[in-house]
Amino acid sequence: MPAAADWLRERLGYDCHDAALLEAALTHRSAAALNNERLEYLGDAVLSFVVAEALYRRLPRAPEGDLSRLRASLVSGETLAAVAAEQGIGDWLVLGEGELKSGGHRRKSILADALEALIGAIYLDGGMEPARAVVERLLRPRFENLPPADELKDAKTRLQETLQGRGQELPVYAVLAAFGPPHQQTFRVRCELPGRDLAAEAEGSTRRGAEQEAARLVHDELLRRECRP
Image (cartoon, rainbow, N blue to C red; front, side, top):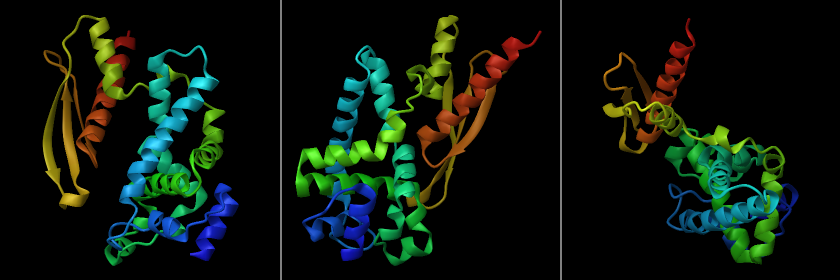
């Protein structure tokens, strides 16, 4: 994949020696038995370590909880998919016919997985230092604009902490429905505060995602009601 190797050199600053590793990293499981799943597994570990180390060095006074939340934000599927899209990784993915027809080169989960696989491939090809350099290059704008760690608490945590701080019962979550094909399901979830006329429903591609959105809606409404005269 000479063209992909040129792209890797220009965009990520790495000159790959083993073309087979690069090809595997960019091959989705829908296209071939030899694909990027194993490299994704390895890249996930490398990425997590590099980000943890970078945060540790950049934020010498930050407590463990803040470091963990910041790391989770930087290595989340949402962030990785955005970084992958910025670098144009989707243009180089090898996908099966079904994924091609459904726009798999733009699907966030596929983009995030491919980025992790590339990091895994770079680690195997060149070692930890080149992998660290690529990760820091990719995430540099985000490292330089880190949000306050408290803002990164997920909606369920914020809602729970608000209720606990007031001695109130914790929310109850229930899955109302799950529909769609097994590989692309949508979940509808309800979040309700026991004993109070306050609940919300939300949908998401995962149960957790739907719960988070429902919790956010309930928390926002709870705060709005308390601000009313």
